[in-house]
Length: 363
Image (tube, rainbow, N blue to C red; front, side, top):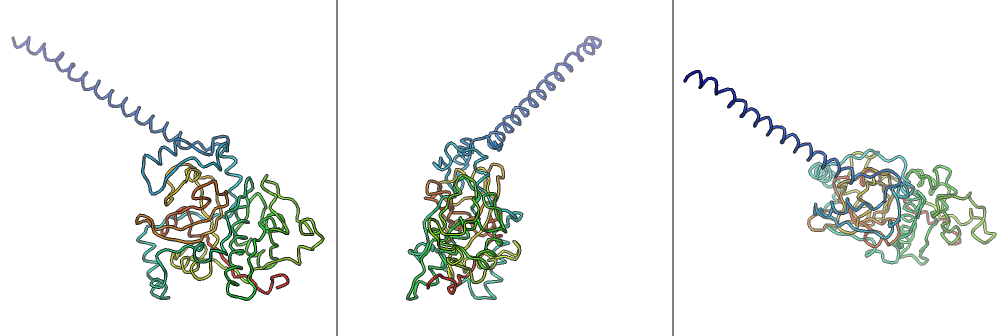
């Protein structure tokens, strides 16, 4: 009987072992399937070759399911466009590395500088330059398929500031300055192939920029013509029509570091819009409303824009920003992006300048 018992044991042991191995194999297969599904999903979200559609439906669905602080959807501006088309528009060169700070880190920095300069209590919780100076903040424009965002944002900031600075003067200067001047005539930068923000401001200070009526925008096809000698359709020398910046400066940071959110806010309230640059990712193409934060998708390039205000939405602090992708994108051409954490580098590369009122032609 003992022999029978001993003889019967091995088959029973093998049966348990086989079941264990089978379960282990099934578990491994399940984990592999989960991993494969995750990789497939990630691949769908990151279709970043230049021929891929600019609007990724998988990204839009992902954002909607995740219920973030912003809404995604189809923007007419990018219907039929590819990732390659988008990259051509992202003309910010010299983009600083994006360091995303925690809200606690930024709060400590802001409290320190606010205590030293007495700014925090004087600043409103919400500010919109369009409401503060409604006749001075010019409409959304469209850079089209040229990497001229750096030229649009710089010229728009100086345009707005000429108007703001002369608002209470006998002769108000309300002029739309020409981004084409910067694209075609600013030898410091690279036209439709992009530019560096501070080099644009150096040109605005030393050379100046003509009105849009003198040099209309013609580089929407991605080609920057040579700098003309005369204003469009006239024999007026462009050098007699230049509006200049009196000086220019970096706002809210030192070389992209030691970022001070309060400094940018104070600059907006006191002097008007500022220019900034930030990193653009695939999900930004589908922004429709709310406070943007980068959630998914590959890095596509650097982009320059104009900050016109700030506020708080559903408890989330934001910057209000004017884009140059036409009114068929985002909030009628504007967007909100999270404030106080250097989201996508939005707070690390801000510039502005004072208008040179003595440079105004025939003033």
